[in-house]
Length: 338
Image 1 (cartoon, helix red, strand yellow):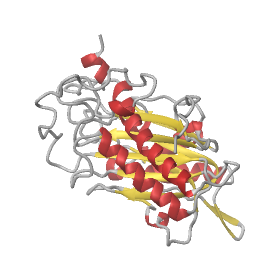
Image 2 (spheres, rainbow, N blue to C red):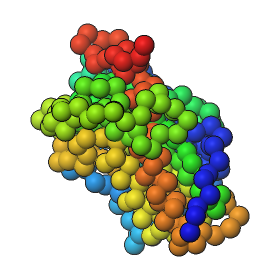
Image 3 (tube, rainbow, N blue to C red):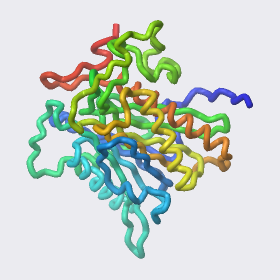
Image 4 (spheres, one colour):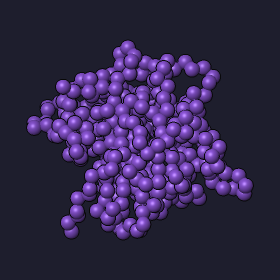
């Protein structure tokens, strides 16, 4: 059956999915930050963890057999294990505004999250006893909006890849049945998003409207394109992200969405899902769409989620700016833009 091509996204951001907003907070002195996806109403959520070295908080409750069905927010943060404090800051903000899972007369915000390793990027990490990431989480939650920046912001501020500066990326798409799908990702990959030593992206076949330069696939694949090249031999890498849809999904269906979205990491980064990666994708369903999805719709939503994730990864690299520290990796535009 012919599928009618989707119309152009409104902003090409995850916030094209109705029912959510995104906020960033950074500390440029330390070279790190936090990003938050805040749901207007609690959203059904799940997680797929395909990397061998993840860093997570409250991820177990997202499995389909667990009792809690919905979350108030999802968090992506730099800082490695220190960044897990950011989820507490987000929870504190949500408690202030009366959000959370109701238990008698109390409300407990449900805020799972994932962290990436950016502790060796040149920033001053000697922040002492101050819970810097708690404050970053609080600030990011308080700053959520439908419009937000890409590149070296939020959780992507300190992110790197094997050859270029990493960052925050996002993309969206509309299904043939008018379900919105979007992705948000912080790219701190073990490998690289570009093909060999060229400026072209592995995600080029999925690009829309020249969103990361419109360069396309190389006319001839360079001989070094598939040479094994990684950042290092330590667990210092993680690509973490969120995919979302406005379709009303069950928790099990949302889990399948997260699994399918992991294909986007494999399409856009080489290598992916390695022992030294922490590749983690959260999936969320806001349920604001008027019609329930069919089985065909579920498949298309998952396929678009993978496409959006691949596109978002390339956009993260394309929009990034280099850190102002000695020895910092160049950005894509610094190295390749004419």
